[in-house]
Image 1: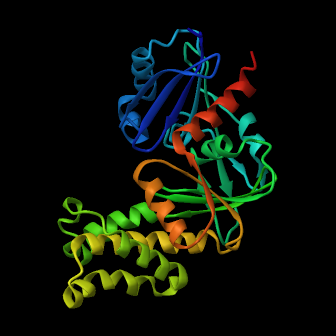
Image 2 (image 1 turned 90 degrees about the horizontal axis):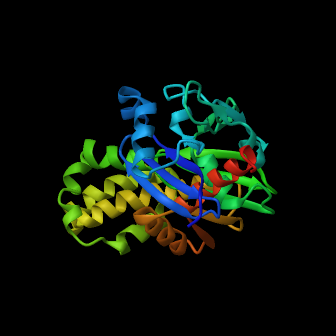
Length: 305
């Protein structure tokens, strides 16, 4: 069995993922929980990390590389941001040490877009980006990373030229629970998904994003006038949001750009369906594989031996 080389951690706002990585790159142990930054800020970051290290029996001398919200201003130690445009390789050299630890713990920086008209930040997704493309990627690509706050990143020859965040997941939650459409989607989770309604909504929103708030309302009026089901209403909301997001994500790139989808699980399926509906070519990269790849590149740069 290979010896442990380092521990990789993806520390989000509400989630925690840790992997013990061997010298051959294999995953020797894994631990996950909902102890994200919000929880860890109360219970203690060091204590949370120590408990998960114990679960995977990580040796005391094995270093830890962390990405995500542990490096935020409200996190464990602020890791700051690297300004775009920048090379992907710059992420590898910006790690910040956590003081007062028995082992070497480093936290990777995020990326910042300081354009006054389009200010934006990301923290955690930059590591997925690095793992998905590699620091020496060639050509022009649009990288889509779905989530609560989806990211669309434009990369050319290994350089991040700009990016945009879309509040797709958070808006879906808010619209589905805190508007009149909450009545329209009641019981939808107990019904089969309405793929046809989702596809139609994606296409409509992509082609006419200016009509988005009207398209949302058709989830209600469609029930009153045409017998739309709760699952159909939910699909309309989801499809409208994702169609709008894709239109925005590609607005500066054009539909001919290469799209890399970094996702897994349910979101992967939704976005793949949306891209197919819009006849957009794409390549899917598993989100866990991408973040581990980015953390591996950082570990190799920091601890080459």
